[in-house]
View 1 (tube, one colour):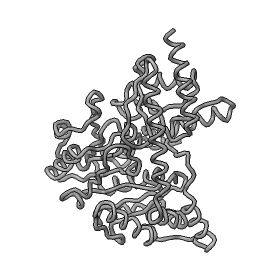
View 2: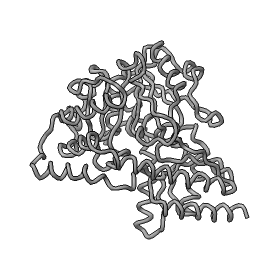
View 3: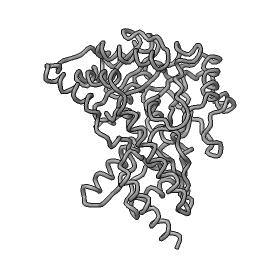
Length: 391
Protein backbone atom coordinates (compact mmCIF):
# COMPACT_ATOMS: atom_id res chain seq x y z
CA UNK A 1 0.00 0.00 0.00
CA UNK A 2 1.16 3.54 -0.71
CA UNK A 3 1.99 5.66 2.36
CA UNK A 4 -0.66 7.86 3.89
CA UNK A 5 -0.35 11.59 4.57
CA UNK A 6 2.92 12.44 6.29
CA UNK A 7 1.44 15.79 7.36
CA UNK A 8 -1.57 14.30 9.15
CA UNK A 9 0.58 11.51 10.57
CA UNK A 10 2.78 14.16 12.20
CA UNK A 11 -0.15 15.94 13.90
CA UNK A 12 -0.97 14.68 17.42
CA UNK A 13 -4.58 14.18 18.45
CA UNK A 14 -6.15 16.77 20.74
CA UNK A 15 -4.72 16.16 24.21
CA UNK A 16 -7.81 17.46 25.97
CA UNK A 17 -10.13 15.21 23.98
CA UNK A 18 -7.80 12.23 24.45
CA UNK A 19 -7.76 12.61 28.24
CA UNK A 20 -11.51 13.20 28.35
CA UNK A 21 -12.11 10.09 26.24
CA UNK A 22 -9.84 8.03 28.51
CA UNK A 23 -11.73 9.24 31.57
CA UNK A 24 -15.05 8.30 29.97
CA UNK A 25 -13.72 4.83 29.13
CA UNK A 26 -12.54 4.29 32.71
CA UNK A 27 -15.92 5.45 34.06
CA UNK A 28 -17.66 3.06 31.66
CA UNK A 29 -15.45 0.29 33.03
CA UNK A 30 -16.73 1.02 36.53
CA UNK A 31 -14.01 3.29 37.94
CA UNK A 32 -15.12 6.33 39.90
CA UNK A 33 -13.16 8.88 37.86
CA UNK A 34 -13.68 12.58 38.51
CA UNK A 35 -13.42 14.15 35.06
CA UNK A 36 -11.63 17.51 35.25
CA UNK A 37 -9.91 17.34 31.86
CA UNK A 38 -12.51 18.62 29.41
CA UNK A 39 -14.00 22.02 28.72
CA UNK A 40 -17.67 21.11 28.54
CA UNK A 41 -19.98 23.16 30.77
CA UNK A 42 -22.08 21.03 33.11
CA UNK A 43 -25.12 23.28 32.61
CA UNK A 44 -28.02 22.62 30.28
CA UNK A 45 -28.43 24.93 27.31
CA UNK A 46 -30.84 27.70 28.43
CA UNK A 47 -34.44 26.72 27.76
CA UNK A 48 -35.35 29.62 25.47
CA UNK A 49 -32.48 28.67 23.15
CA UNK A 50 -33.49 25.01 23.00
CA UNK A 51 -37.12 26.00 22.42
CA UNK A 52 -36.10 28.14 19.44
CA UNK A 53 -34.38 25.14 17.84
CA UNK A 54 -37.34 22.83 18.52
CA UNK A 55 -39.74 25.35 17.02
CA UNK A 56 -37.50 25.62 13.94
CA UNK A 57 -37.43 21.85 13.50
CA UNK A 58 -41.20 21.63 13.82
CA UNK A 59 -41.54 24.39 11.24
CA UNK A 60 -39.49 22.33 8.78
CA UNK A 61 -36.24 24.26 9.00
CA UNK A 62 -34.19 21.19 8.10
CA UNK A 63 -32.78 22.01 4.67
CA UNK A 64 -29.62 23.60 3.31
CA UNK A 65 -29.11 27.10 4.73
CA UNK A 66 -26.87 29.76 3.15
CA UNK A 67 -23.27 28.54 3.40
CA UNK A 68 -22.07 31.66 5.25
CA UNK A 69 -24.91 31.35 7.76
CA UNK A 70 -28.46 32.58 7.79
CA UNK A 71 -28.86 36.33 7.57
CA UNK A 72 -30.63 36.27 10.95
CA UNK A 73 -27.65 34.91 12.85
CA UNK A 74 -25.15 37.05 10.93
CA UNK A 75 -27.22 40.10 11.82
CA UNK A 76 -27.27 38.94 15.45
CA UNK A 77 -23.46 38.67 15.45
CA UNK A 78 -23.08 42.14 13.91
CA UNK A 79 -25.57 43.62 16.37
CA UNK A 80 -23.74 42.01 19.31
CA UNK A 81 -20.37 43.45 18.23
CA UNK A 82 -21.98 46.84 17.70
CA UNK A 83 -23.73 46.80 21.06
CA UNK A 84 -20.77 45.49 23.06
CA UNK A 85 -17.81 47.14 21.34
CA UNK A 86 -19.14 49.85 19.01
CA UNK A 87 -18.05 48.00 15.86
CA UNK A 88 -19.79 48.55 12.54
CA UNK A 89 -19.85 45.12 10.91
CA UNK A 90 -21.53 44.29 7.60
CA UNK A 91 -23.37 41.00 8.24
CA UNK A 92 -23.40 40.21 4.52
CA UNK A 93 -19.65 40.34 3.93
CA UNK A 94 -17.86 40.42 7.28
CA UNK A 95 -19.44 37.56 9.25
CA UNK A 96 -19.07 33.81 8.81
CA UNK A 97 -20.99 31.27 10.91
CA UNK A 98 -19.61 27.74 11.03
CA UNK A 99 -19.97 24.39 12.79
CA UNK A 100 -17.72 25.28 15.72
CA UNK A 101 -15.05 27.82 16.52
CA UNK A 102 -12.24 25.33 15.89
CA UNK A 103 -13.12 25.05 12.21
CA UNK A 104 -13.26 28.84 11.99
CA UNK A 105 -9.72 29.15 13.32
CA UNK A 106 -8.63 26.68 10.64
CA UNK A 107 -10.59 28.46 7.90
CA UNK A 108 -9.31 31.90 8.85
CA UNK A 109 -5.75 30.61 9.12
CA UNK A 110 -6.08 29.02 5.69
CA UNK A 111 -7.36 32.33 4.31
CA UNK A 112 -4.37 34.21 5.72
CA UNK A 113 -1.40 31.90 5.36
CA UNK A 114 0.87 30.95 2.49
CA UNK A 115 3.72 28.41 2.67
CA UNK A 116 6.62 29.75 4.73
CA UNK A 117 4.43 32.33 6.50
CA UNK A 118 4.93 32.43 10.26
CA UNK A 119 2.17 32.68 12.85
CA UNK A 120 3.03 33.85 16.37
CA UNK A 121 1.46 31.94 19.26
CA UNK A 122 1.86 32.75 22.95
CA UNK A 123 2.58 29.88 25.36
CA UNK A 124 0.79 28.41 27.19
CA UNK A 125 -1.62 28.05 24.27
CA UNK A 126 -4.82 26.18 23.46
CA UNK A 127 -3.78 22.74 22.25
CA UNK A 128 -5.09 23.09 18.68
CA UNK A 129 -3.35 26.32 17.60
CA UNK A 130 -0.02 24.76 16.65
CA UNK A 131 -1.53 21.79 14.76
CA UNK A 132 -3.89 24.08 12.85
CA UNK A 133 -1.02 26.34 11.77
CA UNK A 134 0.85 23.30 10.52
CA UNK A 135 -2.24 21.95 8.74
CA UNK A 136 -2.51 25.11 6.63
CA UNK A 137 1.16 24.88 5.66
CA UNK A 138 2.45 27.75 7.78
CA UNK A 139 5.06 27.74 10.54
CA UNK A 140 4.08 28.21 14.19
CA UNK A 141 6.42 30.49 16.14
CA UNK A 142 5.78 30.09 19.85
CA UNK A 143 6.70 32.65 22.49
CA UNK A 144 7.18 31.05 25.91
CA UNK A 145 5.71 33.44 28.46
CA UNK A 146 7.42 33.14 31.87
CA UNK A 147 5.32 31.82 34.71
CA UNK A 148 7.23 33.94 37.24
CA UNK A 149 5.97 37.04 35.41
CA UNK A 150 2.37 35.81 35.37
CA UNK A 151 2.58 34.77 31.70
CA UNK A 152 2.65 38.46 30.76
CA UNK A 153 3.11 39.53 27.12
CA UNK A 154 5.89 42.10 26.65
CA UNK A 155 6.96 44.19 23.67
CA UNK A 156 10.52 42.90 23.97
CA UNK A 157 9.49 39.26 23.66
CA UNK A 158 7.09 39.92 20.82
CA UNK A 159 9.51 42.04 18.77
CA UNK A 160 12.23 39.41 19.18
CA UNK A 161 10.07 36.83 17.40
CA UNK A 162 8.76 38.93 14.50
CA UNK A 163 10.49 38.36 11.16
CA UNK A 164 9.74 39.38 7.56
CA UNK A 165 7.82 36.08 7.28
CA UNK A 166 5.44 36.84 10.16
CA UNK A 167 1.84 37.06 8.94
CA UNK A 168 -0.32 37.02 12.07
CA UNK A 169 -0.51 36.82 15.85
CA UNK A 170 -2.98 34.59 17.68
CA UNK A 171 -4.38 36.03 20.91
CA UNK A 172 -6.66 34.19 23.34
CA UNK A 173 -8.31 36.12 26.18
CA UNK A 174 -9.42 34.92 28.64
CA UNK A 175 -6.74 32.32 28.12
CA UNK A 176 -7.16 28.59 27.91
CA UNK A 177 -5.41 27.16 29.96
CA UNK A 178 -4.27 29.92 32.35
CA UNK A 179 -7.46 31.98 32.70
CA UNK A 180 -5.46 35.22 32.25
CA UNK A 181 -7.30 38.24 30.90
CA UNK A 182 -5.41 40.47 28.48
CA UNK A 183 -4.48 43.78 30.08
CA UNK A 184 -4.75 47.16 28.32
CA UNK A 185 -0.94 47.37 28.28
CA UNK A 186 -0.64 43.95 26.61
CA UNK A 187 -3.35 44.82 24.10
CA UNK A 188 -1.39 47.96 23.19
CA UNK A 189 1.78 45.90 22.72
CA UNK A 190 -0.07 43.68 20.25
CA UNK A 191 -1.66 46.65 18.49
CA UNK A 192 1.64 48.45 18.08
CA UNK A 193 3.35 45.35 16.70
CA UNK A 194 0.51 44.65 14.27
CA UNK A 195 0.58 48.20 12.92
CA UNK A 196 4.37 48.48 12.78
CA UNK A 197 4.84 45.18 10.94
CA UNK A 198 1.58 45.02 8.93
CA UNK A 199 0.30 41.91 10.71
CA UNK A 200 -3.11 40.36 11.12
CA UNK A 201 -4.41 39.48 14.57
CA UNK A 202 -6.63 36.45 15.18
CA UNK A 203 -8.45 37.14 18.44
CA UNK A 204 -9.98 34.02 19.99
CA UNK A 205 -12.62 35.40 22.36
CA UNK A 206 -14.60 32.23 23.08
CA UNK A 207 -14.47 32.86 26.87
CA UNK A 208 -15.22 36.62 26.74
CA UNK A 209 -18.45 36.30 28.75
CA UNK A 210 -16.72 34.36 31.55
CA UNK A 211 -14.56 36.99 33.25
CA UNK A 212 -14.25 37.33 37.04
CA UNK A 213 -11.74 40.19 37.30
CA UNK A 214 -10.67 42.69 34.71
CA UNK A 215 -12.49 43.69 31.55
CA UNK A 216 -12.56 42.04 28.16
CA UNK A 217 -10.74 43.89 25.39
CA UNK A 218 -12.03 43.33 21.87
CA UNK A 219 -8.89 43.91 19.81
CA UNK A 220 -10.82 44.86 16.67
CA UNK A 221 -12.28 47.85 18.53
CA UNK A 222 -8.86 49.40 19.20
CA UNK A 223 -7.71 52.29 16.98
CA UNK A 224 -6.75 51.22 13.42
CA UNK A 225 -7.27 47.53 14.22
CA UNK A 226 -10.63 46.71 12.65
CA UNK A 227 -9.15 46.08 9.19
CA UNK A 228 -6.51 43.67 10.45
CA UNK A 229 -8.32 41.78 13.25
CA UNK A 230 -10.41 38.64 12.85
CA UNK A 231 -12.53 37.94 15.92
CA UNK A 232 -13.33 34.27 16.56
CA UNK A 233 -16.14 33.47 18.96
CA UNK A 234 -18.99 31.04 19.41
CA UNK A 235 -21.77 29.66 21.53
CA UNK A 236 -20.13 26.64 23.19
CA UNK A 237 -18.81 28.11 26.42
CA UNK A 238 -20.98 31.11 27.27
CA UNK A 239 -24.29 29.43 26.40
CA UNK A 240 -23.41 25.81 27.32
CA UNK A 241 -23.86 24.79 23.67
CA UNK A 242 -20.79 22.63 23.05
CA UNK A 243 -22.77 19.89 21.32
CA UNK A 244 -24.54 22.33 19.03
CA UNK A 245 -21.28 23.03 17.15
CA UNK A 246 -21.80 26.70 16.41
CA UNK A 247 -19.15 29.39 16.05
CA UNK A 248 -18.73 32.69 14.28
CA UNK A 249 -16.00 34.93 12.92
CA UNK A 250 -16.05 38.63 12.07
CA UNK A 251 -13.36 40.55 10.25
CA UNK A 252 -12.23 42.10 6.98
CA UNK A 253 -14.45 41.11 4.07
CA UNK A 254 -11.46 39.84 2.08
CA UNK A 255 -10.43 37.38 4.79
CA UNK A 256 -13.97 36.30 5.64
CA UNK A 257 -14.67 35.78 1.93
CA UNK A 258 -11.77 33.34 1.51
CA UNK A 259 -12.69 31.50 4.72
CA UNK A 260 -16.28 31.26 3.44
CA UNK A 261 -15.00 29.79 0.18
CA UNK A 262 -13.19 27.06 2.13
CA UNK A 263 -16.34 26.40 4.14
CA UNK A 264 -18.43 26.06 0.97
CA UNK A 265 -15.98 23.46 -0.37
CA UNK A 266 -15.71 21.48 2.88
CA UNK A 267 -18.27 21.46 5.69
CA UNK A 268 -20.81 23.52 3.66
CA UNK A 269 -22.48 25.28 6.59
CA UNK A 270 -23.65 25.10 10.15
CA UNK A 271 -26.98 23.30 10.66
CA UNK A 272 -30.04 25.39 9.90
CA UNK A 273 -31.91 24.89 13.18
CA UNK A 274 -28.79 25.40 15.33
CA UNK A 275 -28.40 28.83 13.75
CA UNK A 276 -31.95 29.69 14.78
CA UNK A 277 -30.95 28.75 18.32
CA UNK A 278 -27.73 30.73 17.97
CA UNK A 279 -29.54 33.89 16.93
CA UNK A 280 -31.88 33.51 19.88
CA UNK A 281 -28.89 33.09 22.19
CA UNK A 282 -27.32 36.35 21.04
CA UNK A 283 -30.54 38.35 20.81
CA UNK A 284 -32.38 36.95 23.82
CA UNK A 285 -32.01 37.35 27.59
CA UNK A 286 -28.50 36.92 29.00
CA UNK A 287 -29.52 36.02 32.56
CA UNK A 288 -28.40 32.41 32.21
CA UNK A 289 -24.95 33.47 31.03
CA UNK A 290 -24.49 35.63 34.11
CA UNK A 291 -25.76 32.84 36.37
CA UNK A 292 -23.22 30.43 34.89
CA UNK A 293 -20.43 33.00 35.24
CA UNK A 294 -21.27 33.48 38.90
CA UNK A 295 -21.27 29.72 39.43
CA UNK A 296 -17.84 29.32 37.82
CA UNK A 297 -16.55 32.15 39.99
CA UNK A 298 -17.89 30.47 43.12
CA UNK A 299 -16.17 27.24 42.11
CA UNK A 300 -12.92 29.08 41.48
CA UNK A 301 -13.20 30.82 44.84
CA UNK A 302 -13.60 27.42 46.50
CA UNK A 303 -10.96 25.50 44.55
CA UNK A 304 -8.03 27.93 44.54
CA UNK A 305 -7.67 28.38 48.34
CA UNK A 306 -8.55 24.74 48.93
CA UNK A 307 -5.75 23.56 46.63
CA UNK A 308 -3.25 26.06 47.99
CA UNK A 309 -3.97 24.82 51.50
CA UNK A 310 -2.65 21.37 50.55
CA UNK A 311 1.11 21.01 51.08
CA UNK A 312 2.86 20.39 47.76
CA UNK A 313 0.15 22.01 45.59
CA UNK A 314 0.18 25.52 44.08
CA UNK A 315 -2.57 27.25 42.12
CA UNK A 316 -2.84 30.84 40.90
CA UNK A 317 -6.30 32.36 40.70
CA UNK A 318 -7.60 32.68 37.11
CA UNK A 319 -9.30 35.91 36.06
CA UNK A 320 -11.63 34.21 33.60
CA UNK A 321 -12.68 31.07 31.71
CA UNK A 322 -13.25 27.90 33.76
CA UNK A 323 -9.81 26.34 34.15
CA UNK A 324 -7.18 26.12 36.87
CA UNK A 325 -3.51 25.77 35.92
CA UNK A 326 -2.08 23.84 38.86
CA UNK A 327 1.45 22.91 39.94
CA UNK A 328 2.30 19.88 42.07
CA UNK A 329 5.87 20.47 43.27
CA UNK A 330 5.20 17.90 45.96
CA UNK A 331 4.72 15.23 43.28
CA UNK A 332 6.80 16.05 40.24
CA UNK A 333 7.83 18.74 37.76
CA UNK A 334 6.81 16.47 34.87
CA UNK A 335 3.25 17.28 33.84
CA UNK A 336 2.69 13.88 32.17
CA UNK A 337 3.78 12.11 35.35
CA UNK A 338 1.54 14.33 37.48
CA UNK A 339 -1.47 13.61 35.26
CA UNK A 340 -0.76 9.86 35.40
CA UNK A 341 -0.45 9.87 39.19
CA UNK A 342 -3.68 11.84 39.57
CA UNK A 343 -5.55 9.43 37.31
CA UNK A 344 -4.12 6.17 38.61
CA UNK A 345 -3.87 6.96 42.34
CA UNK A 346 -6.63 9.53 42.88
CA UNK A 347 -8.91 8.75 39.92
CA UNK A 348 -8.89 12.38 38.79
CA UNK A 349 -8.57 13.12 35.07
CA UNK A 350 -6.53 16.24 34.32
CA UNK A 351 -4.85 17.53 31.17
CA UNK A 352 -1.02 17.56 31.25
CA UNK A 353 0.31 21.12 31.05
CA UNK A 354 2.90 20.18 28.43
CA UNK A 355 0.02 19.80 25.95
CA UNK A 356 -0.23 23.61 26.07
CA UNK A 357 3.43 24.13 25.12
CA UNK A 358 6.73 24.25 26.98
CA UNK A 359 5.41 27.00 29.24
CA UNK A 360 3.00 24.40 30.64
CA UNK A 361 5.73 22.03 31.83
CA UNK A 362 5.14 21.16 35.46
CA UNK A 363 1.43 22.04 35.35
CA UNK A 364 -1.83 20.22 34.88
CA UNK A 365 -5.09 21.85 33.86
CA UNK A 366 -8.26 21.25 35.83
CA UNK A 367 -11.65 22.22 34.43
CA UNK A 368 -14.10 23.62 36.97
CA UNK A 369 -16.98 23.23 34.52
CA UNK A 370 -18.34 20.50 36.75
CA UNK A 371 -20.52 20.32 39.83
CA UNK A 372 -19.26 21.74 43.12
CA UNK A 373 -19.81 18.34 44.73
CA UNK A 374 -17.34 16.80 42.27
CA UNK A 375 -14.81 19.54 42.97
CA UNK A 376 -15.14 18.93 46.70
CA UNK A 377 -14.50 15.22 46.13
CA UNK A 378 -11.48 16.06 43.97
CA UNK A 379 -9.95 18.26 46.69
CA UNK A 380 -10.45 15.50 49.27
CA UNK A 381 -8.74 12.96 47.02
CA UNK A 382 -5.82 15.31 46.35
CA UNK A 383 -5.42 15.88 50.10
CA UNK A 384 -5.29 12.11 50.64
CA UNK A 385 -2.88 11.60 47.75
CA UNK A 386 -0.45 14.27 48.92
CA UNK A 387 -0.58 13.11 52.53
CA UNK A 388 0.22 9.55 51.45
CA UNK A 389 3.01 10.68 49.13
CA UNK A 390 4.64 12.88 51.74
CA UNK A 391 4.24 10.46 54.67
